[in-house]
Image (cartoon, rainbow, N blue to C red; front, side):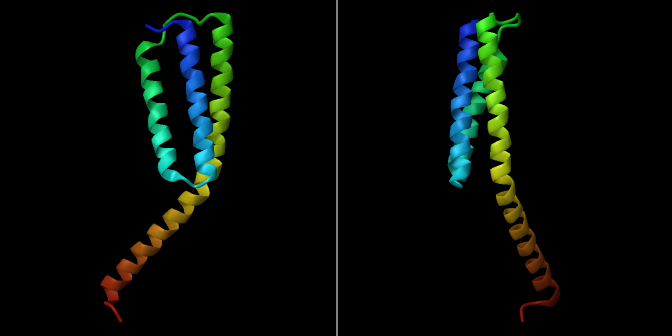
Length: 109
């Protein structure tokens, strides 16, 4: 079981990671973004397995709420940055699929 201080510290560590994730998304460094997401997931699992059931101390609760708000803002920014890239990727995949279907249907010219 984690202490109130440890819980707040883990949330703040996750904020540092999501800030790095924003930077990776801004520079289109998708591999780094994935690695940072994996590191963040480790913290989430740690919290799930060890977070105390009772309420946090007031100061630590404030730190946790502040961290969650920052992570939500970062998440929104990351989605704003990744959605256009994902749309391009989807269009490319669809185009390739269409080209394959045409080639199968009509053969190569």
